[in-house]
Length: 144
Image (cartoon, rainbow, N blue to C red):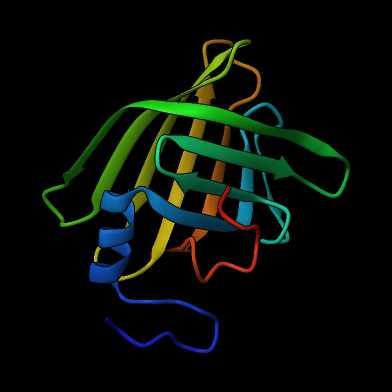
């Protein structure tokens, strides 16, 4: 197990293991809103994706208001590595009202990543850009 640095970051291999175990948190530093076609610098304590097994919690907000905070079941999970060595994860997040397609890219040899959320409608499409950490060391939210 690799040592954590001061920000709680860990190495790529350990982060990949957390993805395979489906116990990780993505803490966003930047939010891209497709609806507004602009980037926002955001607080990682307020913009996150938490995955624990087959459940996921998502919160997306900017200075104006919370865009959404939802809990979903997670299905149709697929993981593979790109030719460049990045880890790619796709999944479907579903609740009784809607389904959201999730695409996560974990960049090779880092814990830097992006998570793209897209719905069947054009509105409500967001990208969180930040870092991935194991759920058990995240100070964002506790795993549920």
